[in-house]
Image (cartoon, rainbow over all chains, first blue to last red; front, side, top):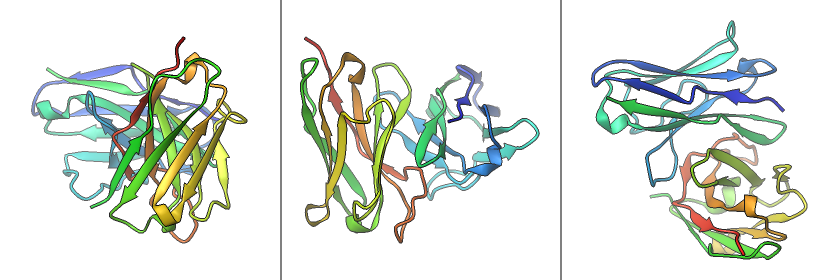
Length: 110
Length: 123
């Protein structure tokens, strides 16, 4: 199985843009779709990006996802930061019928 | 509205057993693969197990294989996780999550999640 590595934390100011990376340790990032979840304190995870770059209904277009084969990584970009975006974010993919999660990134909106 | 409501969590001693449940509503439960995902206190998410719509295909994380059993009752719109030989490291909030896959095919992610049920394992 591969691992997904995320930065422990990122921060940004309201109105700015932040990007959270998710690097796959082995195998191609393009081999299996990547999802992103938001988890606010005390709440369950919610999907913000699925299948690399698709937004569930109700998720604002400030959230976008992409993959980069050259760095073998996926990215979640949040533009126009709001204080409400402060949360933990997890990337997730799969391998051999198993889900694989990144370790999570704490986003602080300063 | 899709709803997933977990129940059955509670304090259990090491070596003990517990069954947690997930009641589903707002969608045709029997058409979707389902999963259990857990989160230890202050830690990240860990996938535990998945089950296909008709229970034909079942998969487990290595960390729980041989100790946990996932099952479902489509007539009752319910998902279960039987946990045996519990260890301190199994202490976590257990979430059920729906896989949006249809037609028996997994999409390998969760589009809806429950609120979770806490299972502390301690003497």
